[in-house]
Image (cartoon, rainbow, N blue to C red; front, top):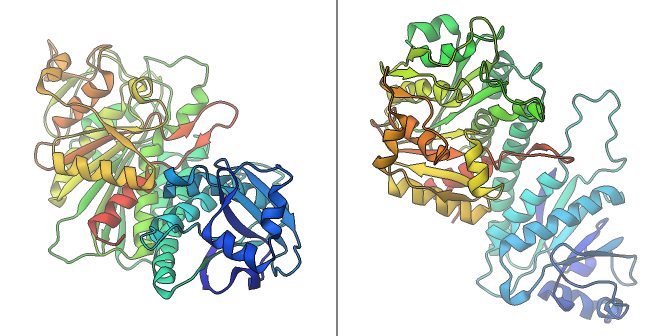
Length: 498
């Protein structure tokens, strides 16, 4: 997808489709009113048929209106004008671009629905760009007969009135496109089946991201090197699989050499059958998505590299499978983590925290300014928050607040849960320093409590994306979240969204 910005009258714009925003009760946006005046009232005349409502995401196509250079005009419903926020444009554009992808229009021009001098041009264009990337995404890598649109939508142009608007829109389109590419990468990796996307494959893709990038370095540690580091928790999970574990480390040096990096640690369980504590057969195929945390780390770093952000980043992805085998973890086994702390494994299906804890200990060597781990960690988070928000827990209020604000801005939201000391006792073990589960109550929180025991050396936040990383059912597939959230957080850290 290509994005561009253009100044000039909309009626003179040559395009396959001109997208005009319309608010509830058929109130034209400012750009729509200007176009309607130039076309002698033809747009308002179309409303007389009452085929269009202006509700968010509603659409209506008009063809070859006299006096207009565009082949088509698409009315795009934006909802209530008094309550309009940039997020509504994103929701509406998702419907519009999906329709245009099927219509045969190869390009389109979006006349932004500007309401006044203080319009958030940057946010409006970011929303539209993100919607375009999502609406045109398809995963057909594993199909023998691919059926892409005959004339896919390839170019989107934003129509603007001033040079200042154009500059803000251009920056937003660049950011949105990079985030879109990172999100697509995360989706592609997560949608691949477990027999293709193994820990070794994930490592190969990480190396490919760094290829030809002077500021990005990828290191992959094999099981012998992992064992030398004393990562007994990570290796205990991989023992039940024929696929060897990998520890994937990406180092992006875009900031000052002395600046402390921000570290992203993503769970890379490429398939999770639960081990000896085996999962039910129904929907077990969805457990290929248990590496969405790791995929989001790769996608976020790819986006930051494309944007050449002036920041130092570390990406760490512990990757393994969790399968039942004669050598797999058994309930009651005790393993020693890289930190030296011992863990009694009461449930082998609580394996994500086992591979993460060693990676979090490994992150200390980079002396990070902050560490954010991302994991499809607990079903309890889905029960608590559904598929709208990722669970957030942290040992630092400023870091948590930064993630909350970033999520609110880009629509990839989080909700903070408590991490009070009283929860820690649920992890007590009679035989080891801790158990790997804390009982039925507060499962999302006790999982974070477990991880917190390995993050005392730095500022840390934990994102539980079990409910947001993929969609189940007929339209199942990866969402690419939280690549938008993480990239927004890093953009704001660099003050690049202003």
